[in-house]
Image (cartoon, rainbow over all chains, first blue to last red; front, side, top):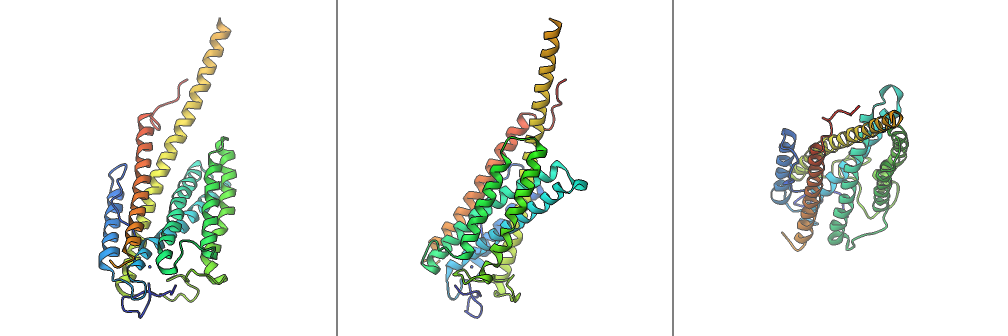
Length: 262
Length: 45
């Protein structure tokens, strides 16, 4: 696949997503997310021109690239939050919950990246899947963070879980630069990055470039919304578990006291 | 849309569907957590 995109072939091809996701709570951020994604879908599907080489298949770039960007962003936030949890001076259960929330969102977008890449690869490469370095390292990334999420569900004290998961998150994060640079380090079927390539040459111009930029911004707003909601849910669940534990202890004490009294 | 339009529509539909499902799932869990009183109730004893 070539690495530049344009309607006239001077720069060459790539994908985005429709908004319309219902929000659990209508808020300014939720409204901004829906609006941004709606505009993004219009730009990607109707306003941006078709690529001279790939035709309409290139429109998948406007969702494939932002999904991959969000996966990078999400796992970076997970790594940073994990370091903040491990660092004694900044340790707070909040960082552990943010790390978990961001990793979950990252897993959703990594899976989407792979699925969208497969949908794009079929018309332009002639195959749904290749054991190419970029595709393989991305699949490994998905399974690493699925393992991380599984680890979060193991029953343990919040401290023990936090330490174990923070270390696992940092180990898993090592795969993120490998995924990004895989197209530089190895001969791959996957093209080099359109923007953040080693030469920092932007291989996309005009309306296509603006549409891609808007897509990345819209997905980033979506990420903030999703992580905020997921963290809020985790905080509520954490609080509920603590209260249930406190209630169980209180009941035990009451029962013990009445047994002694009787 | 050209001959590959089906892949594009499938990609956008998949993304929209996955995100809508995830947001709906989050919404259901949040409402359930609020109904159960998480974050407001005080521990007994």
